[in-house]
Length: 484
Image (cartoon, rainbow, N blue to C red; front, side, top):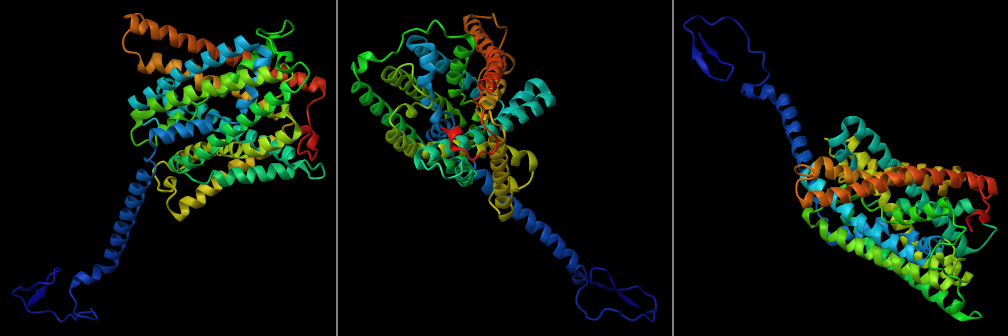
């Protein structure tokens, strides 16, 4: 008999053929019996190819940030309407100490940011701040700093919805409108601006942001200068002082100092920004550009407006000008309020996606599912930040407390620890190079711990004083008075 092999070949066995019918309905090769299996394998192969294509496209999408755009992102994160609170800081510290603190903290912040960048270059897998802390403190440190990172960014996001509310109240100037309406509008605008998932795409907003804050500062300077010159005695009668007033308390002085410290807190998102750089080594150009711009803006803004207005300067300083000028300045400053807030939402959102989908394609936000998840994440954190900002009647003081607890680490004592544990080569006393940098990083560490301890104390005391003076507003209040 002859028989057919499983591969379709016909062979002679030498035995009579048994009476067996071929149950196949067709005479096609047996290959076709595995068609369904082949289809499954082909589908898996196609899916793998699609995922690979999405991954390649995603990686390319998040590697387009040059040093100029990085500078813009850092400016957006660091320089916001808070720069117009510097003049009130000068009013507490005095002109000379104010200038010294502005320049000194600025230079130390540049160096601390430089150390953070060195860690990123040496350990490229550290795509967020918590990953760098893990190298020193392990999983526990990683999880704690992860919570710190997301919490401080979400609260800053809420702070910008609050600032937006203050701006709208001043601009519209209609007491019949519930203040919550303005806060909702602010939250929606922040949500919409935070939708671009990559910092390279978002950087274009940064140019508008920078023009906005510079214009608001210039308007405030010119307006306060002109108004002061027209008063009896002119600019010579302004009551600014070189040194702090004798009645200045430690709480007031340290609160004023922390305002300047937190204005230089641009290292928080630096790992996140550098992860998207096409050439991470260019980060040095960015931090020097940002640092020098910040030092110039903060020192000039604080000194000039303080010399024009004196000890009665308000925070933000544009409230020290006439109502009409304040409304114009707030209108010009609207972009910086919402753009600077949105970048914190993007940084937190990117971290959440990377933690939730470390090996998936959703984190690249270049598919329908990816966009759906991204929009939900941005919407959720915007809503949460809005609720917290509206529910806590002393939110601004709470934000100061959280900043003392967390920003002190991100900007100062963590970078110092990074240098000692991850960057330093050899003993701290081996050569003048190590000795000098050890002393410098030791100083930065001490400053960070001082801000952590003293800043927390004065922030808690500030909350207590607000309750004692009856200046704490209500939760979810329609009253515009508490936003003026």
